[in-house]
Image (cartoon, rainbow, N blue to C red; front, side, top):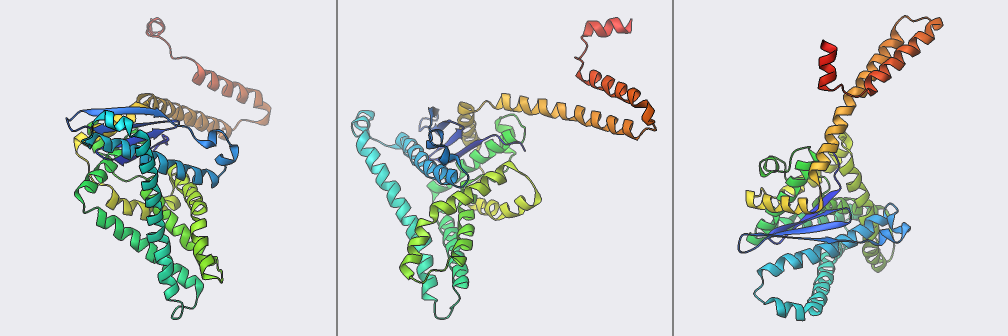
Length: 357
């Protein structure tokens, strides 16, 4: 699997796909057509070098992803609203303010449910469980359980089911490209709905990292402990991002084992899409990513690798041959001839005919 730098998310009846400094949103409109829009995106990492440092970049990307995610969700929802476009244009600033408030409310609720509630429950167990490390572990387990229960609950909603199907289409399209397949409905359909760089996996890693943090950060004051849990969220997100980034770019047994819980949880947040959803995901990818050039580069790399392997094997065989030290010149001559052979251009058909005659 080759890393493509593609990332995205499901939106209402569509898919957002991001690649480097551009993102696209493809939405299946009520009339059955696919609306695709593409926009350039900027990051404070481009202006400030410190924002590109490990861990810090994770905090920045997490915040920017939340912002982009809310914008694209709002955009996709606009296709299914009954208000006229003129009314929307007049209320653009108002809608932007509402979107900001909704985002703030969502963050407050998330912190309240997944940070404060587990903390308060663990504090209530102070007498029967005097060990702060054990209470920290219990707090983390409660947090993960609440998150899984929340995801399971919302997955029962019909609208959310469709979002999860588009989420599956997003993953399948990225997997298709990264597995070296042409981006067609048939090829995408054959791919898995899980992916190591998924936001679901990221959130689960955040919770696991928070368990380690809060097990060993022991503070006497209960209010300070609660405040620290909130203040450390960006740091934990930054560390979790580094793991997800590394896992997405590497494939080994250790990474695969550590990624397994997140991939298992994705069985709740991704569903098998239908072909119409796959078409939307493909449209989103093609708007920001030249998959044909990507596959061609991969093909070229794969063709070059065997040549290098053959050269290495032949060179090893020459070293093994019983060539005396006095015959170093002969050995060098053979190696030089070998280099010329592999670097020589492929003969044309006319040259081949001439050599045959």
